[in-house]
Length: 117
Length: 160
Image (cartoon, rainbow over all chains, first blue to last red):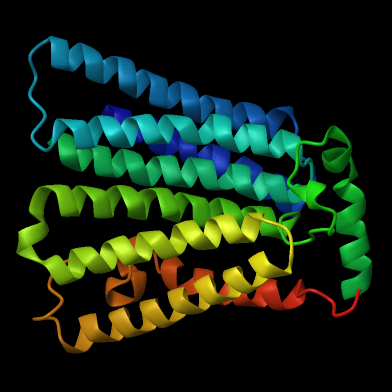
């Protein structure tokens, strides 16, 4: 597991925690929950840029390259999709949908690490 | 209490229907894709995407290694896709499709889970449902149960 994974681990768990708490407190999605999910997207963006730099620098991906990029691209679609959905229905339940993003991104980052090394 | 909750959920869904962005435009009022239902649909969507991607990858790259397991993966992916779509759609027909999909999912995870435990030789290759979905934090086992509870609570009222 590399630094990119740990960044997503921390940001993802924090984001899921904030969203879960907001959902339990019966709050509708607000700045805190939506921005925390945006932070997950930023963390994934850092992973993307870092990975592109590493590939250009000549570092090989041990597993299937297209599988790695597939995971990364799919993971990056999750935060915008969840935020879009949470705006369509502003109830506490949308916060639970937002909470799912951080954990899912975390699992996908772990898998991306496995593929890379 | 259930009635009160239902009313509350519908109230909170009002901004949704006024924007016209939801799938409620079919006339029949759909209470399955709001509130907790959205969370259920979201989790199903994640499984639909990941199971489809995994099955596609397995079939394209190493199908001959374990055709049965990988066909099962593809079948599981299909079930998740059908469940996701039918849960999001309004109307009693889609309700029946949802029930069927979730029941197939429950049977699938139980049968494949049991087979993978008792006959690990025949099922050495991973599918979403192997070992009752242990590779996915047992969510595949939990999901159809929650799905059935949710569908029962929001079952269409006859002659309504």
